[in-house]
Length: 350
Image 1: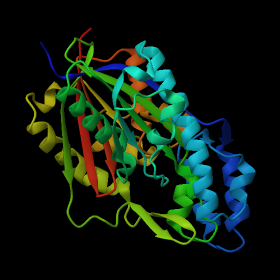
Image 2 (image 1 turned 30 degrees about the horizontal axis):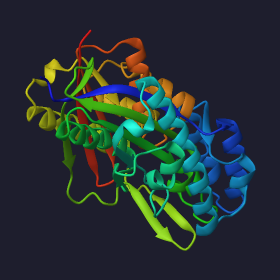
Image 3 (image 1 turned 45 degrees about the horizontal axis):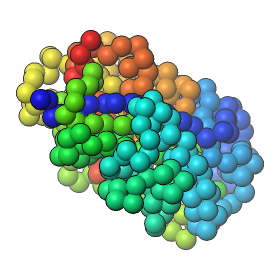
Image 4 (image 1 turned 90 degrees about the horizontal axis):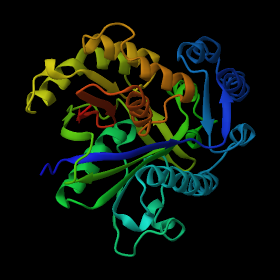
């Protein structure tokens, strides 16, 4: 019997408020332009992202007022709990399972703090068993969708026949800042949206799409590339280096190293499914991975429709790839704070 973990179901969800990219630009200009002379020059970033619209957990007016930790945290708890329940129920419905049939739940989130954690807060509403194993993971950032899938797959494999629920959920928009007049803050305002994805995995009883292998690469001396700063007002985004340049220089070798430890050659990968950090990152990935320009089509479509939602974004891409039909072997990749590359190999039987 094959005890590798199989993907039983995948679902995605976004909060109810949709923002057009031009609408966000107008709001950002109103917040910063008169205090930050460089804003007009940087405003071209909004047009170059490839984003048409994004989603937020609060109405656009909410973001136009300056907020501190208490308000951000309350918005996070309310929005995240609602989104968690929605996406988890979708995934369970597609798996034809009840919440009581889930043995382990893995929660990936880096955009808010909750103790008790999200899966505990909604356990009664969902109907989780009292003996469910809870694995909340904070701090993986944009790499969380792939790293989380790897963690969930290993947990499923350790207990064949049990069901593992992975929920990757991020409310990036709640970190919008009025006080940080920086290029990093303008970049964040031009890119990030809110969303969630959920995956049900099970090992030991067949399955069309299976998690074949996984790997990670942590670069030393790269803590300044991406992350959060924390102060009395909340999270502040850290972008100290140009990520597309780093991707183009280092990602190809990192993928080769990670795949080199797996039981198939790099040439055996039929499709890459990548976390689309932004239009420039997608182009850099195509060059780094020696792909044809435009090969990462699902990635561009997801960025266009949702923006960068951090951890769940790559699972939105995977959802589209599954709908179109996966080839025999795919490699999911993502980059996140650390600075880290994470990958998961999927084996798909037609």
